[in-house]
Length: 262
Image (tube, rainbow, N blue to C red; front, side):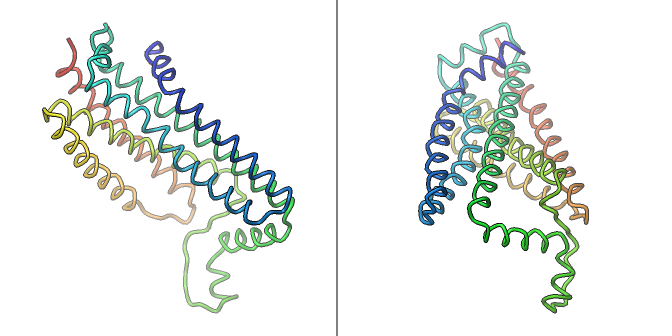
């Protein structure tokens, strides 16, 4: 398993290096724009960094899925299944590499965003004031709605963005949710390539299977209760997402073992 995991990490390092290179360039532009107080440059580079964070997370997860599709559809990739390793280990290494890549990618961009926000606040004191007002409102929205804005509304969720546990739980939930969707894509590819022969039918079938599983994942996440202590809700969503990922692994691995092993 360790050798397979290292092999998968080496195969996806090109995507990670490309993301790192683009991030360095955009970060340099953002810092320079803030330093020179260029509002258009700051806004544009900040938006691009945010888009890169979202796209980078997606690319980091999809790289493993794309490699699995290549392994199942090309003769060169199929050589992996001729090795002594069982499909349980091969698929496990791919999914574990996906988890590691997503975790590192999200942690990198989260740290970068935190640094950029602090750097921006140090140069724009007015923005810091707006941020304090927004965080105070989220910490007790019912009080502000009823006593300040005179709105008869009750908002049961209180979010304190200064709480480190909330940030940690949000990070875990984000990674776990992305991993569940990547596991859904993995299962869809395995089912399409082993059950539906033919390139065109397998591609269409994989998309339809992924769409159906993705809908079930989203439905199950939204069906969870919204608790007043939001960290608990995030941890519940994370546990559900990881359980769904494990379930899809235990479905896909036996299919690969019976249909693809030699």
